Length: 122
Image (cartoon, rainbow, N blue to C red; front, top):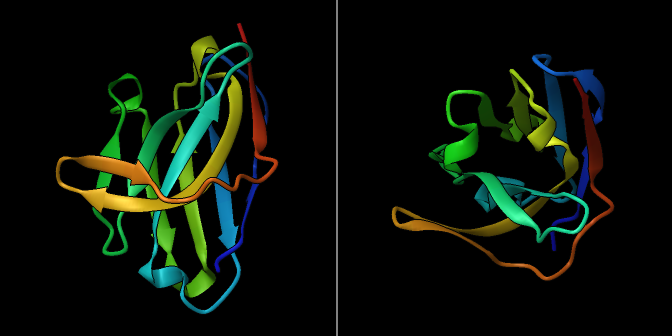
C-alpha cells in the first residue's frame, strides 16, 4: 500500500506562490491517481485538484488558472503549484489516492496524513 507525505506549505502574502509536494513510498506509485485536498478551520475537506496515472488533470473551479497539479513518477512525487494565492486558499492541504474518471475524481482511501499548512496574509 502506498504511503504519502505532504510538504512545502508555509506563510505567503496574497498574490504569492507556493509549491506543495506529495512524496510516495513503494514501487507502484505510477499506477495511482492522486488528489490534492484542503481543509480550512470549521469547514469540510474539499478536493482541489486531481491527476490520473497518465497525467490527465481536474481542478475545482475556484483554482482553475491559478493552480497546477503535476507528477514525476521517476521521483515518486505529485506536485501542486499554487500561484496568485488568496486568503481563501489558506488551509491544511492533503494528498491521497483515488479513482479518476472523465466525470469526476473520487477518493479511494480513508487514511489521511498530517498534511501541510498553507497560510496567506493580506
